[in-house]
Length: 217
Ligand code: AP5
Image (cartoon, rainbow, N blue to C red):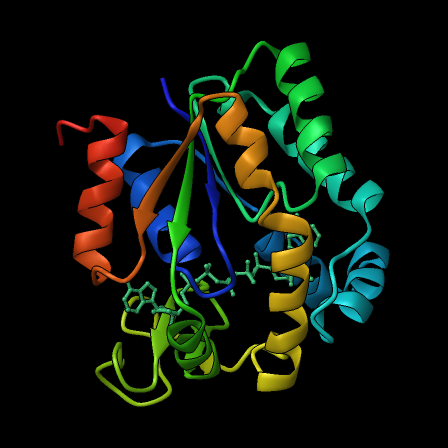
């Protein structure tokens, strides 16, 4: 059984690889970013609050973020493994996750830190387009859909996320370096952290992650 965290800066490829790994192991892909975007789309109270932070590149407050992960990890489909993408991002979140995984007897098995240089992160994020319907990521230069503006997988419309502007990205990177990067030491001390190069290309990075997980498929 694998209980995984994917760590890494915005644009490192967490979402892209999470989709592949979760379908390989048939485990739920739990992305706090996707959960917030879904709440924003539905216009819920959570969505309205989260949008104020997300659109400018700020982190959503810990208590809200921890509450949605608690509810999600409690579900039965996480019994046989789960993959967290974008959580935890702060020390209080990491500590809350420790308490939760202990309570549920669903301990972490791997923390995979996907690395990527800042210049490449800026290129990827500012050129990213996402499917409104299924969330599949594309890039205007390096991962083009067959038909401009249309998702290859479901035919949905492609759009640019509100927080994928250069201004919001600089704020997101600042939060990453100040609040999330220190978690590398937190998980190193627990002997769970493994680094994977996020600049090996989509297949190269996937292969490296599969090696860490000991995947035979
Ligand atoms: P979230 O949705 O989690 O965004 P993020 O962490 O900033 O990560 P991204 O989705 O931007 O990047 P990614 O690493 O998934 O890269 P991707 O695979 O898409 O969070 C959004 C916001 O929600 C946060 O800013 C915050 O406000 C809030 N939030 C979420 N979680 C929170 C938490 N725990 N606490 C508080 N607030 C929270 O790839 C990017 C692009 O690169 C794509 O175009 C892709 O095609 C391309 N690409 C990927 N891999 C490669 C590769 N190997 N080679 C070439 N191109 C590649």
